[in-house]
Amino acid sequence: MNKYDSDIIKTLLLDEDFEDVSTPEEANFVLINTCSVREHAEKRAIGRLNSLKGLKNKKPEVIIGVLGCMAKELPDLINHPVVDFLAPPDSYRNLVKWIKAKKNGLIPEYKNEQYSNIFISPNNISSYLSITRGCNYFCSYCIVPYSRGYLRSRPPNEIIKEAENLVKNGVREITLLGQNINAYYYKGVDFPGILKKVAGIKEIERLNFLTSHPKDIPLSLFDVMAEHKNVTNYLHLPLQSASNRILMRMRRGYTIQDYMSLVNKGRKILPDLTLTTDILIGFPGEKDEDFKETIMAVKKIRFDQSYMFAYSERKSTLSALFNDNLEERIKNNRLRYLIEVQNEITEEKAHALKGKELEVLVVDKAKKGGKIGKSKNGKIIIVNGVAKIGSSYIVKINRINGWVPIGEIKKEV
Ligand code: SAH
Ligand code: SF4
Image (cartoon, rainbow, N blue to C red; front, side, top):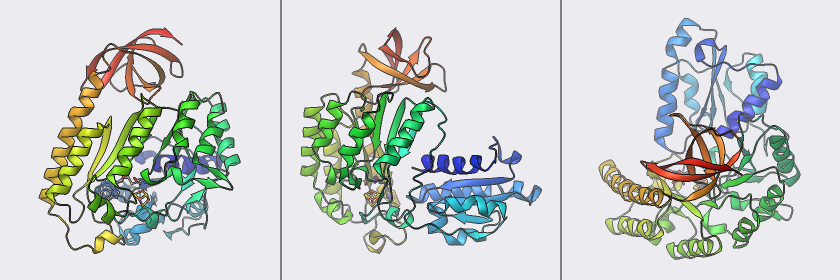
């Protein structure tokens, strides 16, 4: 979401004849887009700000702005020695004026902001496209509804226009974004409805969406995925915990039984579904038994990949009031164990691809040679041989490096 927001900001600035440069030293102003979801993300951003002290001393005229959720959640950041202004998530239309006027302080936000009529310029053949902003769910640990505000759904015609514009500019893969994308609703159009409309743009070769909340996935979503060849058979479905007691305290609105039944239905309709998840370990009051239930569920469900985090207390959330916070040591030990269990599964799943032939869209250059490709069910494959970005190939997987499948081109599709 922040990457997409950074593209919105870039588009707004380039439209006003600003230019982007590759290092802070060349810049007249530096903008740091930030995330507040965990303390770790905040610490990294503060480290980044600290590292700009030398630049600010040498070049006091350089303007430095903090953008995003930290600008909203941590107003004291304005007192940081390098910071000139704070721009929270719905303030970006005011940013240009602010920079031009060299104003300091907190930039005011717009109400109901959706950045609807801003069409980002894509950087390569894959692009994000945000269809909702904010979230209304107030899971007890989560800062998002406070920092990004309530749920707003973008009108379908604006979404289609932006998708068509991306395609016109060479994009072949689009990932629709929303904190809780299945809550999308605009005048009778729900999420399966908008997915269908975007999938109807035939130049889109791969259409992905993030993030799905288990409590509001309609079964018709799997049917839309099955019916449209360009919709990737990939679902990111955060579980968070498999203990019903903890899920209740998290205010997630589903049980592990609901979750399993959804996964089983999805896998029945889409047998090659790639399933990934988020797991939050060490929530206040999580007992050994709760943790074991999560480990058992991870082993049973066999996610293709998990994004695993230790609980971090966030100001203003409900769980910050709970008084049974776990020791860091316990959270970290549990997290380490969970990561070991998941890594083994991820590796086994990757090895199961050895010898298989998959249709792969080449999306980018890989850092260590070869190209990055995406299979039709969202698996990342390193493609060796002469492969053109934007073209599709049948690729035979001949080895696995860690858990990254590496393949050779058989033929162009
Ligand atoms: N909308 C998504 C999640 C968005 S936040 C959903 O409903 O699942 C991304 C992930 O960050 C979450 O899935 C959760 O695992 C993690 N997260 C959120 N708040 C956190 C906190 N206070 N401490 C640690 N991890 C957190
Ligand atoms: Fe946060 Fe997701 Fe819950 Fe919304 S649904 S409050 S974004 S975890």
